[in-house]
Length: 282
Image (cartoon, rainbow, N blue to C red; front, side, top):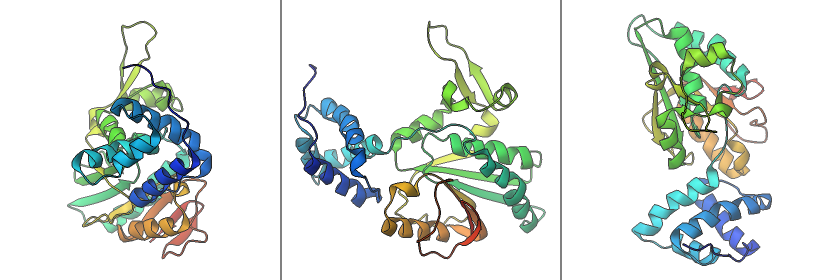
């Protein structure tokens, strides 16, 4: 297919896409994201052989099966993020030193269970880091039922995460001891290709995956801790309040919510109790 020179994304078209992603996922796209939206959606225009952004918008706005299937690709294009293992390591120290010991005290001798949710997990470096941390503390006790849920609205990143294969950037903050402890290395025979790092099976099997929109309730599940980091920055206050209420309802009593280090619940009405910067308790 020949390369098409598309007319630039107009402000009016950007606002249409912004309203649509807000309606679907509650994500507030600022005008500063206009170039990002243009670049990412251009690939979808090319794939579907659409001639303009408006034609693509009209297509995904239709109420038919093909359009609804494309909505998933639209969301994926807008929401892809970059992360790495043990990002903001102090959060995992808090999990190791405070949260897990508190859960241990509440559990009976048998059928001991800990449930942790990595909400908006992207490519899932975070939930695998959680699994590695929990295994370090509880992995030696076979009585523990360790349940870690990784969810995201983006199907593409979930499919990537389930493979548990990462490049050098994802492990760039880890020393060789940690890399060898948590990963199997896969060297490539192809010239100029990167070494791959595969999450070891004992950690991979601890994480389950689900597509989930944070605007929706997490029904029938209660967690001891929820990581929801660097997500609220994409929502306006109305959507933040709704999402925070959903997260509160998904926690057990005395459960913890861990936000990103640049996030807080200031100016948001919620029932959470402040613990320390970016950490709250039900």
